[in-house]
Image (cartoon, rainbow, N blue to C red; front, side, top):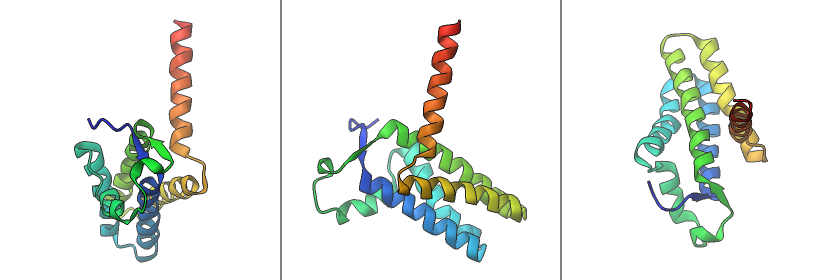
Length: 141
């Protein structure tokens, strides 16, 4: 795993915006292949530690990466797992012709990414609640 345990916020935002844009386009056009853009980028990030959208965005940043507000890499990985899961469920549902279910999963990802852009991280909240639950479980045993 790479030594750097943070990710500059503009790169995280680029990923979030790419998800928002592609999911909105999918919802409008029903072109399920659009979901492959953030899905394959997310899978690449999880399995190979290379996020194509972030890599494409890096050269656009004007300051050194360390000069931006940093996001925790572990938390972002958890968020990426959630996004990949929902995008996969949406894509598979679309391929199976389950339009309503596909749109529900897409809407969940859209809502989470939109809220994250606005400052509230749903994945962070879920991760925190899981951590609290684990801690309580340890204390009670």
